[in-house]
Length: 172
Ligand code: NI
Image 1 (cartoon, helix red, strand yellow):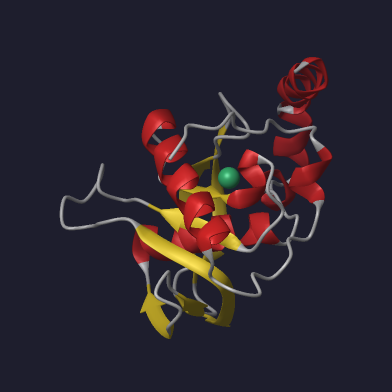
Image 2: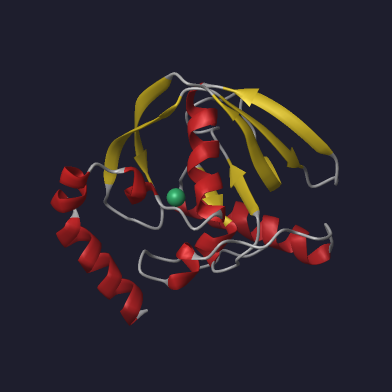
């Protein structure tokens, strides 16, 4: 279990479509442990494998900092099989974009089918912050980033910040 450096915007791994996990083996378990350690250290709500440089379909969510009844959830090879027509606006941040927070509109509810660390497939139907973080993290597995959901105006406003992050990524 190790804290890994978080990949910053500008690194091409964030734009890659992640590979399916063929088998939940020792390597997968180490990857999940690393994600957990890295997220705990960084203090975010979710983290996807590409954000630590591993282009595989895994992400974790930990909402315990905002809801004490929540525990860490692991999603392997997730698929969003339903998104509600109704959309809500919630502020999002991303550990790969330090200092950038924006209100983003997305479906209020989703249904996701995924595999857990025990290898069993299950389906969750969720709303609220869990639905929001699942959509954000699932995007990471498809090379989609939260800035892709910004309006053209917002994108223009954060352009300077994004260029700075790209320089940081290039220097690291
Ligand atoms: Ni993110």
